[in-house]
Image (cartoon, rainbow, N blue to C red; front, side):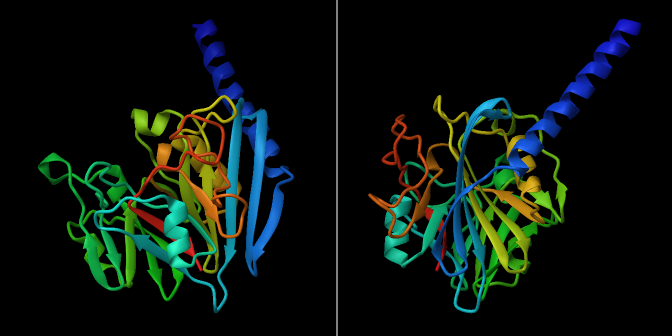
Length: 282
């Protein structure tokens, strides 16, 4: 009995200590920074086995929404194309991949409203159950972005007042609090990840975490939620990830991709997956 109590205490203490060490490493990181446009800063850092006991490669686009600055969506109903192509076509300053999509036939599998018109609807699971990536949304009005939480109603999306809406998820952080996540493989395993966070009414973060490479382990959604919390965000939401995870910046060398997309299984900037939609800043 004593051994069991001691073991339990040690595990709890070790977990707390481990998290504290990680938080200190992350919070004290000297990010490589570059201003890519007025009010928009690109941050990057490669953690060498010192974050969550793993290699991690993180890119962050920090956006201060001024009068002439706007968040927007780009989407195709059938055609799939790389994030870089979406970015160039929309005249974006920066772009990241959007929500989940049909890899064979194109188009999102989640609700999107674009320019005040419904662009795609949720493809529900059996028994009309929502997927985890249909239980939160990006809501964009006049170029300003907020994150919304599903209220359990059937037609929740139709009640959101905005010209542009994109369902995605899971919701990771809400009003400063980490949100419950189930223990399924999708949440628990480490993968490349894309996320968007809101620090206030006029500060937005586009975040990508690389993975599936010895240089970058990727993160579980638990780990992703923790770093969003450490970034002092108020709300945070998961986007499509895995091979889709891409961060593109206009006027950067080569194809403009600054992370290391994993679809070609190489540690370079050429492994973009063709996607159905993106989130951009202009």
